[in-house]
Image (cartoon, rainbow, N blue to C red):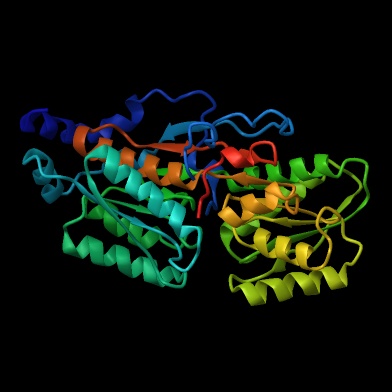
Length: 372
């Protein structure tokens, strides 16, 4: 595309948002609040159907819509110059916690974007999941005036609104992944509707426990986080489809393995007759599985969770974990960076995209690429 044509496109950015036709099943960014949350392997992406033998489900379908924040957005002059000069575009993906094993899957999404999109991109993030560290990273990128776009997986819902405004005012396009920042100046959100995601886990667990009556112990590495509370709300709602199940007070496990194991053990000691442990994150599911395996409860206490770390897949294969639900972290990161590239290079409006979950059972676990 000729430089003068690109500049015409940037001048028209304010009208792009109202001109794009929404795809089927539209969902606004505010409908997908408080997300955290792989590998788009050909046989097992988040948009594919479960393998033969996997339980039937009513998993939410993917949807997309444009964001009103596009109206009035003006690309920074230095970014427009990069495009006009044919420079390789440079993007930064900011994860929410570098210490989490889930970062590996997000890094894979960044690497995939670099390999396939002809851009430069790198992963940055706070070392211990502090929201203020994310704020500082974005402020530094805005001040440096070098980056052509930012994707961020916020630590908490609403934690980045002011700094997102700073990026917007500076003309730096910013897209959120995993954790929505509703009513902010993000140009799009790529991720899961966390309440719907948790509800889906709850519905699948209710089917797994059909005909049984008893307690379910819900666990999370951070019960106070927005993504966690949304998933817990959904989990509780999904479990309600089986009137015999009692949703207990969520147990906060923390991320440290020893602390996690002890928290789960204490919860199960307090509720020795519990039927199941339901995790809403990538890591406490493995802590629950370890507890079950160590205490001779594999297959006796139903353990379910989310995401597809290698250890989780192994536990599914040996029957310790009944199922897990993936939110496609590689796909989320790749999609977000791809939308940034298309917007900056060609003026294509970013779209908030709600990605569907993938149910992982023993029937299809061997086809799923590990997320970390």
